[in-house]
Image (cartoon, rainbow, N blue to C red; front, side, top):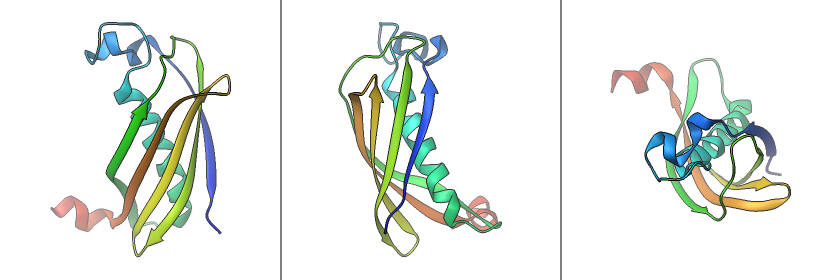
Length: 119
């Protein structure tokens, strides 16, 4: 059975499209929504790691569906949908007040920290 994990974020002014230069309006930027999603999946996969491992994002396919104002609370849910060796796949959804604002498919790989940093 695959695991699910939920994490809560509050949109900061520094995370708006206007602030990061990805748009001209003061709403949650797509890059920050993606960061929320990756962070949630990273926390979920951490249950699978030993002390010498970490995980890295290798793919994300995202749809940003609705704007989100500063100070709004975003609930992100990551559900593991597949595991193939050290590659894990997640379906991730982001909500504000139960309204879907974003969805993604995300892949993470488990890697040895030391070997990864040598590259």
